[in-house]
Image (cartoon, rainbow, N blue to C red; front, side, top):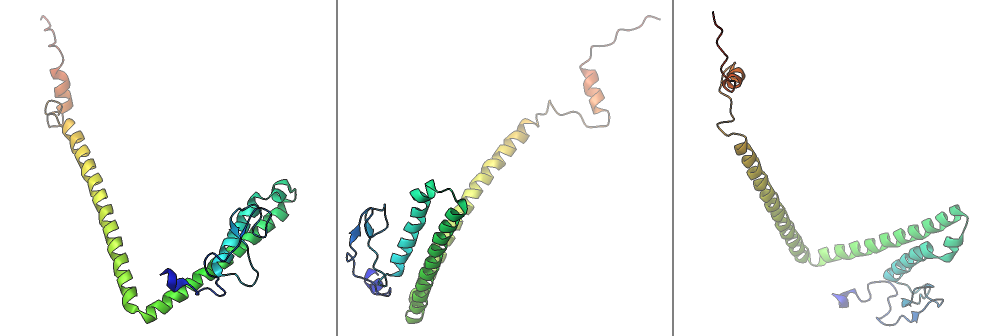
Length: 180
């Protein structure tokens, strides 16, 4: 797959052709190991990476930390984020176009991927159903245990409208007899 991705981006350079820039170098300042950007020769991935680094750099830059104009800081950060989102949309569009080409050239491959995704989703949902059934059985058992504890025959009052009075009077001592 890596070989099929080679050359798919406009102006893509071979791997390892990017010189490494350090802090203060031609790459993004403060990011050791970031690749030097060559204007006009960037790939979408390079632009996406550069815009992400610019977003991050704008958030940690000393200019913004020491800056007093909050509106200027907000505008700069918003511009960096907007550029990142634009490049991300372009990258997504590129991959969607490649996906469309693949579906035209090899429709059986797309069907295989769809079947695989559906199987994975079905397996995930079956596991979720099993998890919920386990919880359901657990709580049914808890409910049954609680209801059994509350149904002891000695605790149940006898049926009838005067059941409470009959139970209460049974526990009272007999009343003394009055002499006539």
